[in-house]
Length: 213
Image: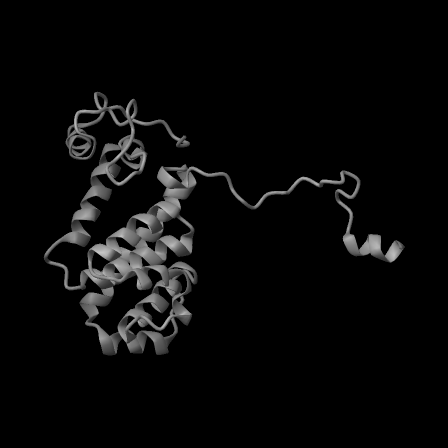
């Protein structure tokens, strides 16, 4: 379950109610969760806790899909998908794998996102933007001049700014989804102590045991 409470259809503000109808029909997403894409849909019902946050994030979706964007949709989805993977959000990664196919990427390219640096299926501009995405998300904005020079040879300043803004926005969405345990990110942390099957070596250094023998 999400870590924050959800807002039912009747308690949501008017814009959220309109979005609920678009996604869930006449169902209450809290009482009857589930979307056409197979997600629970609780991203919407949790964000509706703060109406202007809900409105702000929804306008962000309108921003990146606007016909006014100079950045090609394929390049946009490349950054969003890699950002989801790099942050470790199954929800953002999974949703944008599907979006990558919708805009024309092959199954091979989608499958190569986790190991893009060793894949031969991306164009020079795609490889440059994947490297840039890793700098934005994993290096927190530390970008080598040589990489940025390459970007400027391949894209306009406007395209680079749009890519930067959209990719960083989706790194934030991925982070928040994990933190709040929304959608497919409602999972326990895998990094935890495993039980000792013998019960008598807990806390002991293995090499110390070997040395004693």
